[in-house]
Image (cartoon, rainbow, N blue to C red; front, side, top):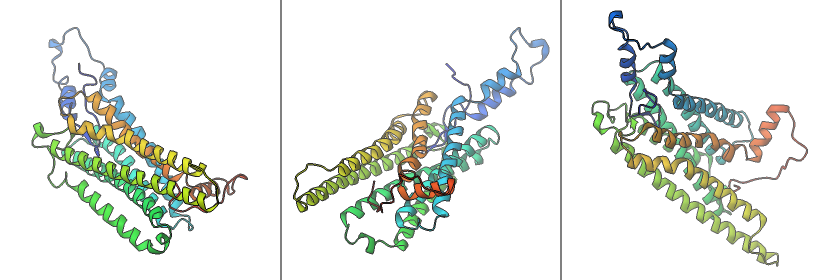
Length: 344
């Protein structure tokens, strides 16, 4: 059953889905043009019918999602960039994450534009490059934030004296250079445009390249999982030491329970959004129904929609800047407790 009869936009770290291609849909539309009126049967095709079939609703959903992602993360970048007090390494990492997700949202909109308005091979490669680079940078920024939180707890006494802005800049530079290099690989020739059978479900990424990206992501997820487990252990140990110091016995403090629940939310959201997509890219091929690809890829893009809520808007310093920018004041019940990068 030919579900929509056209193309679809995906990422893979994402890109155009290998399946019904845009060129084939154009050929299908052009096939009506040369028909001689004497050869037309009783069946007729109206312009509205062709228009309705030419745009895939799933592609529209991805484009709308990309627009919301871009607007949401642009707000985070603007707040951090224009607030002088948000100059700590923690906020640089959050800004990097927002920049990556902003680029990913723009990449989804750009991919939709290239797919339906400017469909040619070079456009597909550019779209693939933007999406691979942006979502790779997003995942790597999440890993950097996780490492930062782990170090801030593991070396709590010396962390703020050892951790410098220069080190953070160098770390972010390495992340972005690596991810931009990955994004340029399809343009440099690592694509399947000239070898259709080798394409993955995310054209123009080949099956082997998609598998390599998926395995790398799963390794990063495994590392993040291990670090967050260590964070929970360290936080529990600190809570027990504080309890002994103040001569009371407790298995866990409210702050510890809140921290563990927050870590579970962070890691659970990340896993639900990205792990199904990564596994799907490993096992699927171009013979799989397009609907499966859409179902796997849409939650992955939604991770960039949730990142600002989890990492930025919950931060009290960013909240204060947003309140100040929106209404020039703070709510009466707002907490001004100083926070560190270890707060989750």
